[in-house]
Picture 1 (cartoon, rainbow, N blue to C red):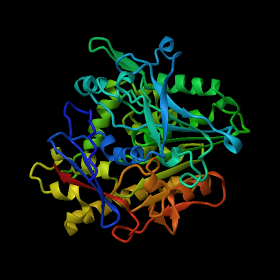
Picture 2: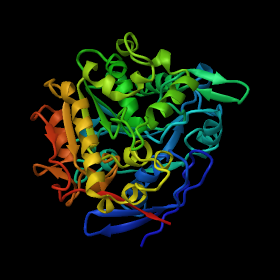
Picture 3: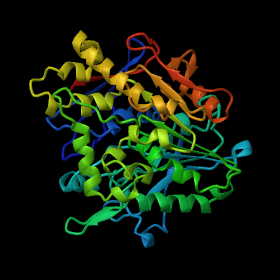
Picture 4: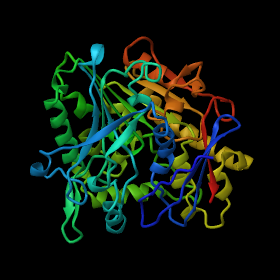
Length: 427
């Protein structure tokens, strides 16, 4: 079993992780020390694919570049350091095409959690890796990434705590909440590097970055002339305002802290805040139908992060009834599966109006997973997850290049045998 050590810098605790090989062909085992805290950083679910890829000597490693002009604009990470990105230049037919991938990695919702985040790569470029693996949608190999391999591909690092939104500070705690400024400074940097003349552009992101790609989609489109083909992709960004197993709304309460503490209100889309409260406008279900730019939603119907941190967190399950089910879907009782089927129905209802637009795309598979675009095994491989024999990379490519309409919604669990499920084990 391959052992990978990952520090999950979230709310004052370290969660030890061990990533395992395939079980029954399509399951991955992630072991961690479960705690009484409600929220886990999404990076423990994203890291497997990156760590697996990094062990392959054939994988492209791309260095970190800091945005030198950001400091003068106040566009800084939570600790005041400069934000950064990783860029692999496009070539050939992709030389004038640009893909911007917004990094994910949870949020912080109060001074205590933000102070801890400040001392991690999620809050400071001082702690960021100097180079990272480009896999999945970022891969430079046509056999792994058939439609975007030779584009300019950029991964913008995430070092604010509110999905590249918000604009405030807490001077007493020496915390900068400058997600919106980082977004603007990064876009200005990329435009100056050649993106201004792009013929094609795609804004994408995973998890908290997937939420950010929704929040900034129309802003991204406004950067270009009408001659540029511009679309957006949100991977695992459809966080629902759902009722948890105790009847409460754990994620709404958490997002309320994120929005309130980081000055997010004034950076949210006005079409939403004109009639809903700011926290509601941080939930994609209240945004996606009104995004004017073509948008593709890639999401699992049984999102592992949302099950663990929104639907059945330990804070909502003091008796431990959901403990085993939360870690491994195969241990869920019929009643628990029925509850999760209700969550799937909520997901489908949330995207119903969005799906009616011809310009939008969907790939909602019935897997227990989280983030599928940056991982090679789920993006495009011999045994990748499919809907109707079409892998995620093919679906996204068909939609982006208008080869065919893509509105792929999987049948309910357990019918899909191509899933790469995430299974968690107590360490």
